[in-house]
Length: 112
Length: 114
Image (tube, rainbow over all chains, first blue to last red; front, side):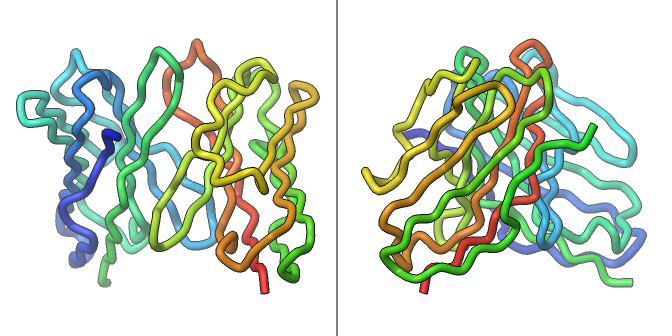
């Protein structure tokens, strides 16, 4: 079946740097995408979302970019902090059924 | 709002025993999802409910797994008999159909079958 996948399984950055986490998706019918952050011992936590009629959406220190032509999603974190260290998942949603499909995840490690 | 509440947080059981995981969704949410997370397979959707009715159980591994939602505030995931390969973290999540910003996850139940 169709799935969401990530290019980079691990990413290490220095505190204060900007981080970019990438995600490729294959289901062209998906029209809603979400980034989740999962810290050790916790459930995934919503970060930011974007609908397919948008190319970019900004939150607090985070930006999500969507390129529908190449089916690519990215999460940019500005001024990365040690507290940002976690596993980041992209997910796509079939809004007809409310079902989220998750990618494999990227481990972000921020060094002080 | 207490969020999605799962119990127990940790469960260790012997192979062949019955295991029941519990979930209380956020009040007012009309979707409930059960996910399983492992290192090998990531986050897998097992089953989800809408208004207490199972909509898609295609992710349930086999007949040993069953899920129920007797009312809007409670759901169970049961494994009988349990096997070591069922060891994983099981997450419950809930959402509102009309608020399209994804799910709220519980803290998960870490299941170990020995």
